[in-house]
Amino acid sequence: MMTYYKACQDSATPPQRCIINALSTRTLSIRNRSLGPNAIPPICAAYRGNLRVEELTLDSADIGDAGMKHVSKMLINNFTITNVNNTSITHLDLSYNTLEEQAGLMLGSSLARNNTLVSLNLSWNKIRGKGAVAIFRALMLNNTVSNLNISWNGLGYEGTVALCKCLKRNTGLLDLDLANNRLNWRCALLLAEGLRSNSTLRNLWVGRNTITTTGAMDILEAVATTGSVIANLDLSDIPVIAEADLLAATISRRREFTFKHGGIVATHDKLGQRVGRELNPMLRIIEYLRLLGLRPLELMKSFDKNASLEMPRKDFVEQIRKIGVNLKPYEVDALANSVSGKGFNKNVINYRKLSMAVREVVEAERERKIRERKEWLQIKSYHENILNKGKVDEYIAQSPSSRSVDPVNALRVKSNETIGLSISRHSTGTSRLVSEVSRVKPALSIAMPAMLTEVKLPGKASKKPKKRSARM
Image 1 (cartoon, rainbow, N blue to C red):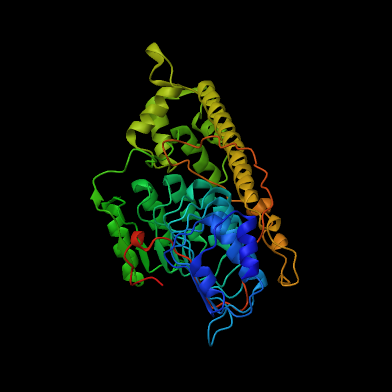
Image 2 (cartoon, rainbow, N blue to C red):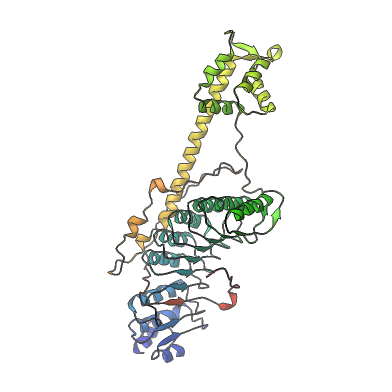
């Protein structure tokens, strides 16, 4: 009690009657009191060395980031907070607590070392940016968490980059709730990439995100792969095209599968709409011949049997059809027009012009590949920078309780494992994504106490949505 009074005096905070009454009991409960973060440091100071308290209840306390930091430091030193017949924390509910980026960084450092937590609820907070990256980087190492609810936050593109890499490595997640997280169709493309490499996730909620009809199809196509075991895909409030329902029906014939969406629309959304790259007819012929091991110019020269460097247009069209390239009639006409003469020679194919056209197409294709390679390297570097923002080695406390596994080595970003984003089939194309790496300040870590069985720190209960029976 003297410690509590002194801490209150030092922080200019009035003592709370409920805390004074609880100091001599086995339960500390400030449920629904909304004391605010300033009242938390004196409380933590009083309970840091308290050997009597066994139960901690902070429902709707509105402790915020700063309060969470003090509670975490207190739990590191207090090993008497426990629950009967349990020796480790398995469920942690931090929903509705205004946890922000810094709290996400600290949680990430804790998850990287924890091997007992099974269920984690971080819904209705403000976890985004570096905090979101840190959590998913930690889950690349942590395979014990099977239920993660991180809905109603702000993961955005940066968080999805880390999530994509996490899904490729993690083998423990079974239920993942990403509803209402500012995810767009680019995020959906990344999510789909991660899902294609995941064979353990069973339930996925992505509803109330602006992923568009294209993003919905990307995710559904990833779920349709043979390695996926997802049995429940929830895209609530997200419209889809009729093709999505047909694909979902196909999946359900192969395995147990339910699909929820926001209704059927006639066409794709304009944003992120799929449009395949139209290949030049000449390029299609060249690529076809390469598959057969033939050189295009030599084959074209074989058409000119009289060595006159010219041939009738109709003979050229017939030869193109004979080599087996699947070209539509209008494509053959367009190809013939591009290499034929002018005026009275319009029905004659000039070999020199044909040779120049082949070289131009080949050179244009080479330049396109070089340009796309540069764009891919820029995106690759951008993703590496994002992942580096949430490095857990900057936040892991060096203490005797640290696990023998080195999280730094386990989570180091390797160039050959970096996510590469391919969006060439979309109308908007690949934009130049260049960003500077922000240097993250070191923060205190949270050490999950080995004696805790369950901690629940939700915010205002009135905001809590209805529970879904399929989860937790």
